[in-house]
Length: 222
View 1: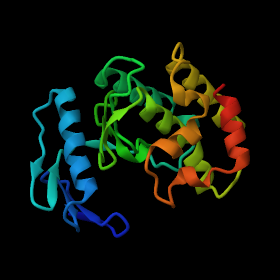
View 2: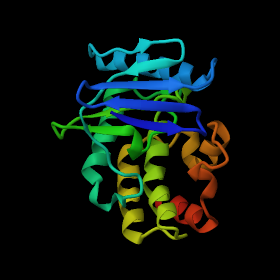
View 3: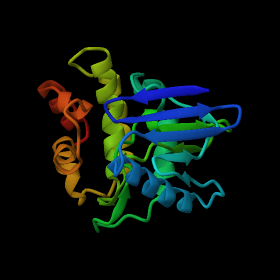
View 4: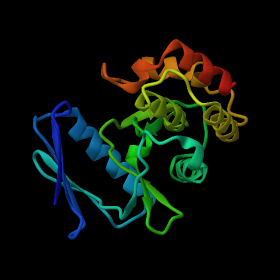
């Protein structure tokens, strides 16, 4: 049994890998994370058409257990082009088709830490839906995810500069996914758009993007 306690978020996760059970406990009632997690998983599991479900308690949720692996968020993206492509393909398969309407579900914190790469090596699952929202722009989760793949490793390395090969890969994947989507409003300035439109705590990694990082990322995705 593994237990992870997050005092900042006021929750805890208990994982029983033998019984394949995950329970997430919330320390305060009327916790928005509890409500979002419940709504997010319900929506997501409907899209997957899987028999997995969530069990609801007064201050806990029994969540689906997905057998697989995770990529550490601080690892450079250079060796993970295939895995990133899996995430993008999964999004396009699960989310409604592209539209300019602002009524698309939003995971809200899509990073490598919240993606399970299943044991079969060709499919994935998104987890941790506590930042779920029901109305957002199409593709905003992928915008957030791709930016995280270059921002988080730099911050973890305690550097201010992104490696050139990371920027080149970001450029390639970004243009491939957002091709013919230039009319999406957030693509003009995605970093500031996310900071303005998604609730981010003070210690969120987007708030530590330096001017140099901002400049290089902006140039890379044009």
